[in-house]
Amino acid sequence: MENFTVMARPASSNTAVSVVDIKGVLDINSVDDFENLLHKLFNQKQFKIILNMENLTYVSSAGIGVMVGLIRDVRKNRGDIKITNTPPDIYKVFDLLELPGIFHFLKTEQEAVAQF
Image 1 (cartoon, rainbow, N blue to C red):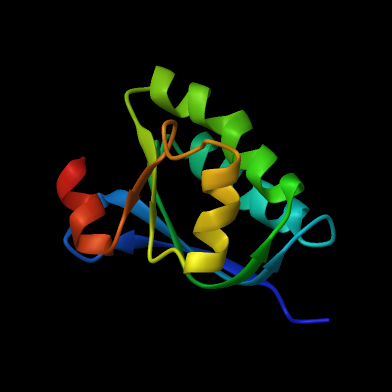
Image 2: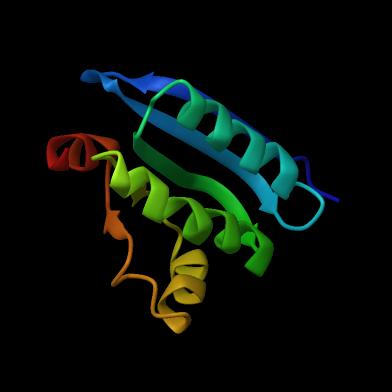
């Protein structure tokens, strides 16, 4: 089983934006760590979030469910969740679920920060 890590950091060009770096397999075994980190950001009133998926190797419905479940509350607080550096295989999962209409997918962190 591949190790999973998730950590938040301020965006380099705008500290009002939080970047969540996700590495490894995001599935039922790791989704609690992911969800806890997102709720921690939410509780800290960090509503401008970039999910950096550059090192994500797999995402299950559990991981996607956390993202979808939080997007409405984030937007109610004048924030958003933007997704960057999505590997093609991971993007296919989002595309099959018709989520590019809900989330903004951008190539780089800098592009995502500029959208806020």
